[in-house]
Length: 129
Image (cartoon, rainbow, N blue to C red; front, side, top):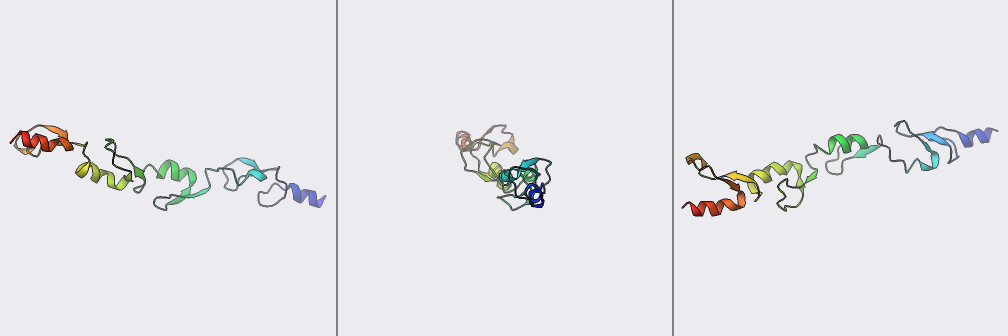
């Protein structure tokens, strides 16, 4: 009888029976068959952001950290074709190099109200001369 109790023990780390339901190792509240513990994709499992090494639970990293991670890869919202860049570099891309970003004419200070995509500004400047 003692070995049957050990075999059926529902403590997740103790016991031998793979088919008995045990509590998740990370206290997410789910009960899983012991044989499926390794496959259980617990949202509370430890997880590290692959972009900046921030550590927390899987759920926290993917739901709260990824949307603000400065090193997370993003695409240009203007769909200019620039390859993915770190979120921290997006603002600089938009302000300085994105060919599809709408910018004011260099002579806006002198009353020119033209706003064009960056790649069209040089043609506008040639027209005005």
